[in-house]
Length: 376
Image (cartoon, rainbow, N blue to C red; front, side, top):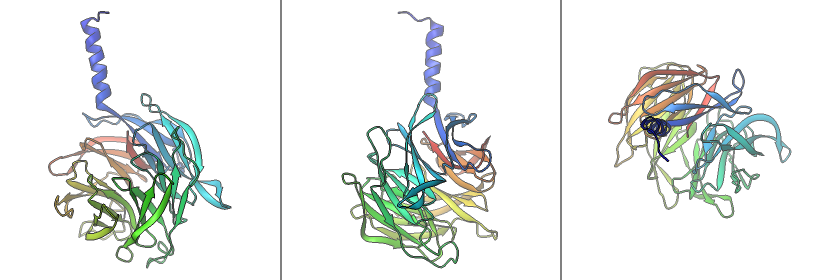
């Protein structure tokens, strides 16, 4: 079969366009105008984010996670109605992904085994989904089925304790759970107890077992929220919601133990208003760490000492909207999308690979209460 020159050019153009485009999924709160999980096309050459469409209708999908093979997406739902052991619980939805259209097809829904699930992740082998239930102070392991769906809870761990904040730390509030880079451990940040717990994961028996030592404590009133790791697993960075700080840990990759190295502020020294932190991420090149401030409404940029893992402040950049609950870096590291929950907007920034600095591209996309960004 022969192709004309025009046809060949057309095919090559389509292939090039497909290679430079990535889907971006957006989790939202459905309290106002949003209806669930949205998807848009992102041009990795220009930084342009296209119009969003509804990928799946669901209640309050406040956090999303992709399977390692990118065939499936998992979303927590903070909506009420379900029960577990006679108590109210949130749920987790498993979806199959249409990689061409970006649409999501529901596989199944299961309980999260706790109230207000606020974080979900997937182990590197794709065999388990991990969930943090904020209001219950529990973390849950859900086995993944062959079809990508999730079975009911195989392990539920209850945190205990409290800390010094009278209303935010009057009990355990599990805020995130992330598998280690090698998948042997899971790190659970609990805002209420000022601790990060380490669990050993057994993917065969689908169990979570507290490691030795079981946890590391942060300064009273810190409120550890989210955790990000260096690509080699040697360092972990925990952003502390209440204290507006970022703590660097050395990770013992044999035992999962976290050892505190440094804590730095996420806010400028001259800022006097109210603010809390939200998200933390490590640049793909490992040279920079980013954290979001809600109130100051900014992304704090830090440079990483490659030998020590410690941080030096670079700059603070306005997210051009209120309450940046979440943000994500493009896998290439060239772009960052910030989700302004109360600004009802997604804002795109260009990332300087040499300095880590952020520059607004002028690309802003409207969406109701965006709270999670995931590049496909």
